[in-house]
Amino acid sequence: MKTKLSDQTQQDSLGPEWDKLEESLHQMVGEQTPLRRKIISDIFKATIRLAKENPGSLNLKISATALKELRFSFKMFRPHRQSPKITMFGSARIAPSDPLYSLAKDFARKAVQRKYMVITGGGPGIMAAGNEGATAKGGFGLNIKLPFEQSANSFIDPERGLINYKYFFTRKLFLVKEAWAFAFFPGGFGTFDEAFEALTLLQTGKTNLVPVVFLETPNYGYWSEVIAFLNKVMLKKGLISESDRYLYKVCHSPEEALDHFDAFYKNYHSTRYVGDLVSIRIKKPVSEKTIERINHEFSDFLNAGKLQSSGPLPEEDNEPEIKDLPRLVFKWTKKDFGTLRHLIDFINENTV
Image (tube, rainbow, N blue to C red; front, top):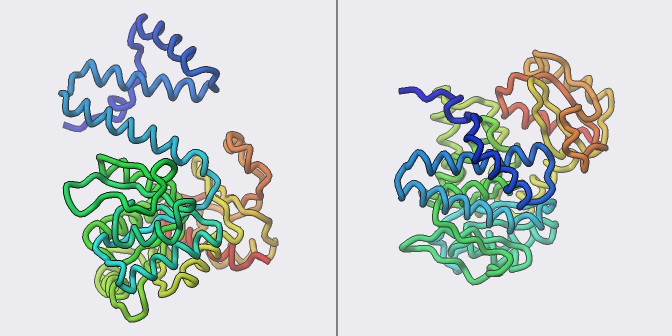
């Protein structure tokens, strides 16, 4: 039986008892904007409905634990909201003597030198290499509690950088949400899961566009083989698009990977979707000649309307900290995020 969306998001009153509770709730949390008041009320309404529907103790426990993990994670990352972060993935089984460990450690060390912070899954192997290279000051460890194979590595500051999770889904949310870039090293099923989920989220626009690198030592033959499969099988059979290849890059040194990240943020800042409009926020304006070239070279992609320079859209008023950034705005059907990534690369490459 299909569940209607309205059933999932219903906002009907919970009665006069709720009205009294809601007022006490808002007094408890202090002064809030109207939007935040509504969101807080929605959280508590959902909690009350969950209790009334009696889904069983186990489901209530899952809900409570997930909410606790979300709250603590928000608290831990809040002081570093403006710090660019790279999420590193890779095998927990890589030994410190392996060249891949040295590569991951060197990558993290050089990333911190370039003012990035590093996020890992908090365990051994590639994760430990990342935290060791980043040092406790520059790294986070998002550790999953497992009965075998993984415990938090010793390179994470347990007070400021370590977050322990019971559930993979809450952990995965923050590995993705906080990332300004992804660096994938060779690994097993877990690494493949993270890599293809990240690409799926980027391909479908379910997360912010960020750069992705697949990093391995020269001639290691891991990611190069994976990409060969993507090209020879998935692309050939029409299961992915040619433009999806813009979403990732195979690299063989820390410098190559970090240069790729730096190039992505050379002028690009962020993207905001407002109805059928896309607002690309950039750090400095591009020339009219560049805009003309974009409209010509990306004409198939921009078939709903030409790209033009703009100030912030009215709906962007809730981001006052970036109100002075120039914008490039166009209409779009939100299909083909690979070409959108290609467009961002073009903007960066044609910025003086």
